[in-house]
Amino acid sequence: MFLEASNFPVNPTREQLTTLSDALTGPRSTAAEIAAMLRAWKPGPAGSETM
Image: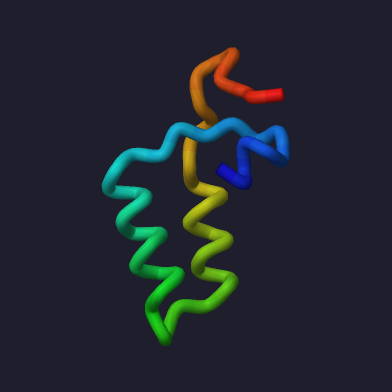
Protein backbone atom coordinates (compact mmCIF):
# COMPACT_ATOMS: atom_id res chain seq x y z
CA MET A 1 0.00 0.00 0.00
CA PHE A 2 0.99 3.60 -0.46
CA LEU A 3 1.06 4.16 3.29
CA GLU A 4 3.52 1.32 3.77
CA ALA A 5 5.67 2.68 0.93
CA SER A 6 5.72 5.95 2.88
CA ASN A 7 7.12 4.07 5.90
CA PHE A 8 3.78 4.07 7.73
CA PRO A 9 2.87 0.43 8.28
CA VAL A 10 -0.84 -0.29 8.62
CA ASN A 11 -2.92 -3.41 8.83
CA PRO A 12 -6.44 -2.43 7.71
CA THR A 13 -9.34 -4.79 8.14
CA ARG A 14 -11.53 -5.85 5.23
CA GLU A 15 -14.25 -3.55 6.60
CA GLN A 16 -11.84 -0.58 6.64
CA LEU A 17 -10.76 -1.28 3.06
CA THR A 18 -14.36 -1.52 1.91
CA THR A 19 -15.21 1.75 3.64
CA LEU A 20 -12.17 3.43 2.07
CA SER A 21 -13.12 2.13 -1.37
CA ASP A 22 -16.65 3.46 -0.97
CA ALA A 23 -15.31 6.84 0.16
CA LEU A 24 -12.85 7.09 -2.71
CA THR A 25 -15.53 6.36 -5.29
CA GLY A 26 -18.34 8.28 -3.59
CA PRO A 27 -19.19 11.63 -5.17
CA ARG A 28 -19.86 13.28 -1.80
CA SER A 29 -16.70 12.17 0.04
CA THR A 30 -14.20 14.87 0.89
CA ALA A 31 -10.44 14.69 1.20
CA ALA A 32 -10.76 15.64 4.86
CA GLU A 33 -13.07 12.69 5.54
CA ILE A 34 -10.73 10.27 3.78
CA ALA A 35 -7.70 11.66 5.62
CA ALA A 36 -9.48 11.27 8.96
CA MET A 37 -10.36 7.69 8.07
CA LEU A 38 -6.74 6.86 7.22
CA ARG A 39 -5.46 8.50 10.42
CA ALA A 40 -7.74 6.25 12.45
CA TRP A 41 -6.13 3.09 11.10
CA LYS A 42 -3.94 1.30 13.59
CA PRO A 43 -0.29 0.61 12.79
CA GLY A 44 0.52 -2.84 11.49
CA PRO A 45 2.50 -5.39 13.47
CA ALA A 46 6.17 -4.69 14.16
CA GLY A 47 8.37 -5.73 11.29
CA SER A 48 5.61 -5.38 8.70
CA GLU A 49 7.42 -2.51 7.01
CA THR A 50 8.70 -3.17 3.55
CA MET A 51 11.95 -1.65 2.37
